Structure formats: C-alpha cells, structure tokens
Image (tube, rainbow, N blue to C red; front, side, top):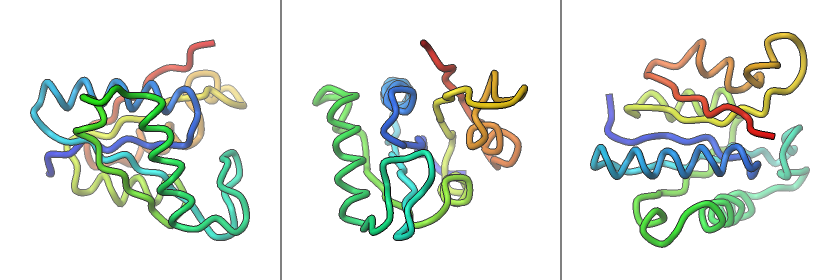
Length: 138
C-alpha cells in the first residue's frame, strides 16, 4: 500500500469537491494527492476529452480543475497524472499504489445510479484500497 490519495478528476463539480476533500485529508495524513484524469485519443463519453485529445490536453484539464478547486496551499500537495486509459481501469491501476481513492458521484441513470455513478460504483466494487465517494449535491 502506498501513501498517496488518488482522486478521479473529470472536470465536473463533483470531482472538484472530491479533490478538495482529498487535499484536506492529505493535510491530516501528511501525504500527497494524485489527481488522475483518464483520457483517450479517441475521446471518452461523458467528459470534455473529445476525439484527438492529447496528453498535454489532459494535463491542462487537470491543472485547470486543480486551480478551480483549491487554494495555493491545497495545490501544493497535488500531483497531476494524466492516464491514457478508460476511467475505471486507469483509476484502479493508480489505486494499486495508493492508500485511498476518492471519487465524486454524479448519480446518473438506473436504480443503482440514483446513489452512485457507474465509474464510482465500479471503483468501490473493485478497488484494492478503501474508497471515499462524495455524494452528488444539486
């Protein structure tokens, strides 16, 4: 088990809240936050990462989210990590070396989706480390 807190970033308000929560938790634990945005050259549904996205685009998107969600002190404990993979696979790969995974939940679709989104639900089910899911707030 590692010492980082991995946070899934997708640019949504829920992922910004997850990042802020993780930064506060990292300050308490004395560890770092790894902000992970999964991307693909082919684009990813449900994100702003369209066809033709590059690693530089993904890194810029993470940095924009970090800047919007955290003050300077919070940003000091965050490392940005663009991952060329699908969200579940990419986050689970990063979780293998983490102490904790934090994700936001947009609560989309279906009966299970009333509580958790598909990515957050799958992370909870498959993560090798504890997971914190911050609930969606209207």
